[in-house]
Length: 596
Image (cartoon, rainbow, N blue to C red):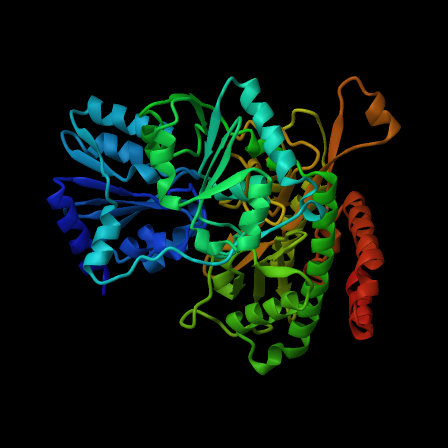
């Protein structure tokens, strides 16, 4: 089944519904970044399987928008006979602008489950202003086309499981009590949730419905006197259902959510950024609606003491796995290790750690030119054998019961060129500068982003991705609202937040470099910081404990401050990680840490 057949099937659906333009977003009904296989609509209709991007299909052509992380990948995966790639200038698809310029007098169709409340209003205003019409459809036309061509669409049925206060730091009952307090403070009777990590966090539940994410496909509705989880009960054991009932949570079928919501006759809180237009339509049947950011977003981002200690434990395990892998690779690359085998071997080392629940995302294992594809995924057709004549970039992470990890290291197994060392050290200097930042209360990620880019900017270089994203606690590897990016977040970095620190440099057709640690925002406790009238002041604690690539560091480019910082970081690795390693690994690690 080729792209032409798929587009023909979709256009047949469009003609039946009298649609001129059809929007195919990347997200699902739960505003997910990582979408379950059953809802992978945009990859199905385009062949582009990057995690960000969306499609517009007209009756005679198709367009894909994506950002700079995926330009190379999209060029490789799209069939230019049927698709035009639209390169975004930022991280937000520019489809609205295209519609405004190209859909005069036309009928644009959307699935309201896949379009947020605010976006639907924007699209409605655009279509009205250009003499067109926005059609809100009950069916998803890509799903209809898939079924017509013989595909099956089956929701996952993995078992859900509970996590407890010893891991989360807070009981389900306590979280419900807190949320009900937020409802009272905002004069709301209910809050309706569709975002899966928020539901998982609130109900202390995890699952396996979404690859790399411990989530359960579901909706939640919490009121002042009741809490309902709309989920396939076949995923729940009788014991889990009883535990939920004991905390006042009732289980109802997933498909009952909209009907139940529509009959409440109450004031319902919907998250203005993540709730779908379909949820708003359902709620408005009999309810007053409060559109406001969900309070869970910020509460979940601020890790409590138990979660912080858990993430430290997770990163200790991850460091053992990662260091074991690096040693293995250095000993075995000459046997013909390719990108896929290397990724699989790293997964073996992670699996050997207690309480691993799988990877936190699809490992990016890119040798030479493949490393320049920012979100590369090795396939049997693309996988290169890792040799000693170029750079190898490895971005990976694990989902442990105690926390979520994400680390990138770049290696050279032979003798790197002067240019490669120079580029690597520029990236390292930006990484170090951000890591040692001290910043006052109210500082947002966008205020710090240039620290990581400055060494590259000074040589007219840059990278086309954000510098840091938030990370969950045995939840999503990408978690808001905090981030470190040129794009504004307007979200101050606060103690308890976890962010990545991952500047990079990508030489198209040659190699890629990225260095990534996860960091915890902490409050400085020294006397000067405490006495300052401008405080409190914050800093980053490196959670990731794996050495940088010794042979790629050009020491002449490092400042005395850089060197002191690396020495301090390496002392922490010696203290916390070395004693957990086998004797031969301890010897190897000691050499890697002997830099100055």
